[in-house]
Length: 599
Image 1 (cartoon, rainbow, N blue to C red):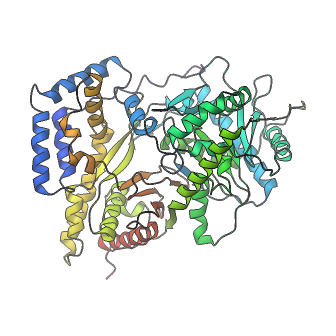
Image 2: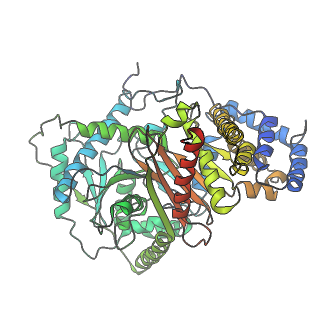
Image 3: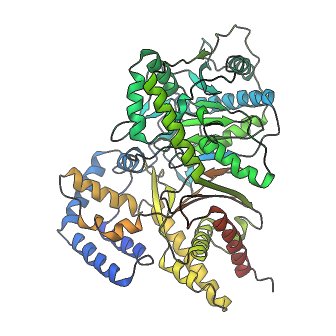
């Protein structure tokens, strides 16, 4: 059993992340390039890779460096991976980085019910935090193996801070006097809401509710400047504005209270009604970016690790920042919230007068006003450029592949490649994000596709022979499942390649030639960014593409249906989220027909 210390130690049973064998990674890298490049380019790259991997060569030297690093650090790659994948990126956090999760609409309408549900939601999250603090949170497992739980305490009172060259994450929950407030935003106005009583007990739902009513009465729609919009800027621009903002004592105090808060709650204003079929897409977009500067985008602080969004029409969800949080722990938190929401409020409210929630004020000079105007324009351009298509595929879910002894995850990945090929008449580099939390301090890894087997199947798809096609389909799905298995053993290729590259830089060497090769650039121009939400609920995850001419596809397979969200940028002539969505539905139906012919 775990003693109830502030940060329970869940690590003992989780092994350290291994450094994969060099030859294995280089061979897998070449294999991943084959479906994407013509043979003469592959041969050129193969010669480079062979030279790099020679016994006693540069690769072997860097590999030794990584193995030394693995012996002396908690995790040899995770800090580098987080730095490279997230903190070094200068792109805006909304759309480009922060994933949004949209949940099934609650059965209510109007601001009164919005505040009742928001109170319950806050109480549920505080209950989850209490379970982490007292070590009562069951250890996550994947395929029977325990996972590292280090991430959980870091979700609260943490915030990303912009910097000129790269960002960093500030963790305020580790101090002796850890924060006891959350931030509530309504009509672009931020409030500090204390959520614990003076004796340290959590506030009850009715206490929280009475405080939200007070916040509502203090936050009428005014001509308030939407300070939160600043956090949606390009990171370098925001970094400069941040430094200007913090020169003022009042601003610094307000910003610190937002950053140190346990999490943020965004009480969104009503948005225009639209048809039911478009509602799911609009709801996901609303959580992802707030719908624009005339809508709720000013109710966000995009640097915050956890932001819950509650609308007046029963829509709700959350937005998270990836340098600290990731999908599976967030899914665990959401499951806890949904369970908690089924229960009546157990506690009677103590009859103590509560202090008024503190409104956060800002001094806005001409320069900051200009920063806000600029940020508004840029965010609206980004939002208008993003095409979001969310749909529920109801013909079948994960039970169908399982009946045919196929991995549902791999089944969908092959279907995505086939759908992309049918729209664009070519295969594309795709990355799927997978957890590495089976290792101490592990974060994420990419699985690359297409494989040779997938390409073979795609090219044979119009072949009349069902038997041959079915065989190729099985091989494609099984190959992807095998890649997944490798990655779960810590033998993915992308983090290892990144480690070799950064190790060279660390040792003061020039970047190895294999990373300057055009093949490396082409293979990491991810036109398909994919992610699976391992949730037991009908939630939809949504984020933007990684490249201007790409797509992002998230999916949540349930037993008899699958939720999908597809995003693309309007500025690219070739990509249309709706075209890919229609083709994907059709492709899934044809794959069902392939497995279970009706004729």
